[in-house]
Length: 427
Image 1 (spheres, rainbow, N blue to C red):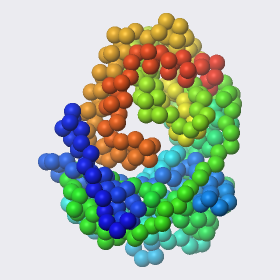
Image 2 (tube, rainbow, N blue to C red):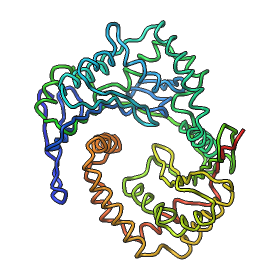
Image 3 (cartoon, rainbow, N blue to C red):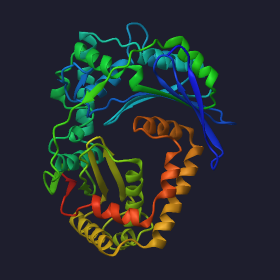
């Protein structure tokens, strides 16, 4: 590809648009200009997360297994360089920078109110200029080892991973994103370069710029910094995951004032990940079952079983999916019984159609309002692209969903007999 291809993506209903660019380097770029917005936000990410521990590159490549936590370790290491680190360079441009590793991606980001081009140049340069040595890797092992010990004692984090370990036997989603002290001890500079060269190929990445930005300034920096990359085919490999949960109950003791619980209903996701429609159906379904305006939520609140920290979310990715309810309670088993009974009641009787229409409108309004937050829009754009969706696709999907779709999803994806519960109790 010798030139950049720029395409405007419009949505008439929202009276909004963004630009999708196939950059000559192989990178996909999205630019979302927002009029009268003083700040700018950029996120540069790769489709590479903590679950990508076994993979091969190219048709004739061999599968390699790498230590747990290496994607997160690599994220930390990229901020360093032989001369000045990325944070030192950002201090000169005035940008506020950060990064994160999730189960399926690693992203580097910044926000600023000026010097956007200079900050973008820092972002694209340090992410595409790896520098690892034996000495710097050893130093980082100590730093991240301490971080792992601290997060293991964080009640909310412990609650989630205790639940995931109770649900998943083989899938790496049950492993802490940062890995373990032992696993990061196996990481070497050579392994970091292997993972970097496999996943930090521009064809496996995306850049989003939003807010007080325009296509020309983004392309000027991209053209200056990015070199053309040959596309590589990456194949991930996961052990087969049984449909059944590992255990119905697991607990851990930490310094908590009140017990924390998380209840997960494991879904059969053989054949890949859920579609945008299925995920949206699940979000509406969870709101109907136990959202803040549901009868079940009020009932449990009135009974003193939960407080306002109670939450329901759909948790999904490549090879895993679960409907999770979490919060604080002195009687988690009773909360579980209430939720099981409500799910069974709705599976038998079906959802109330008026309630469905109300919740659907609520989600529609929330989706539209989300476009006022450019930071959120930038993250939506990169998530949607890595999942094979477009930014505005969610509106079309929402419009198409019916009460019958929700009833079918509830019957097919939730089995009260295939659930796990984690409880974090006081020491």
